Image (cartoon, rainbow, N blue to C red; front, side, top):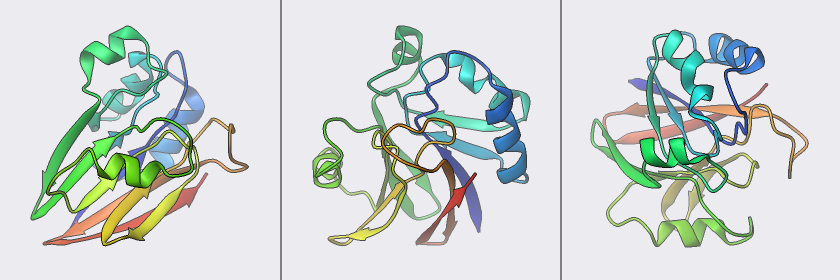
Length: 162
């Protein structure tokens, strides 16, 4: 079984001790972390790299140009037999899952951000996962991160309130 940490919508302009503490506490023993956009500054990832994490990221709608140049707006990750689409998302929170689903063909799951509202579930046969935001309270009353677990061709998710 492979475990992957998932974060999104950090909205920070640099490395952050609170974020580093969250990563150390909740992603201990996890080698790979997906950031689903809106990190704002590429330096937000410094703590992940310093902790020895492999980072897979996409850029979001609030990211600075350095992030836009470094990371695509969407990508597909293959883990074992599972194809995962990764995108930040756009527009109003209502209806976001059907919008982002149209972007990907032949994926088993979609990881996204943008809404700051955690979501883990299957909708119209597709597994969707949004970790929420670990540090930004816009549009939600809680902070969260997530872990996805992949075993052969199965994917499960867990939302962790921080």
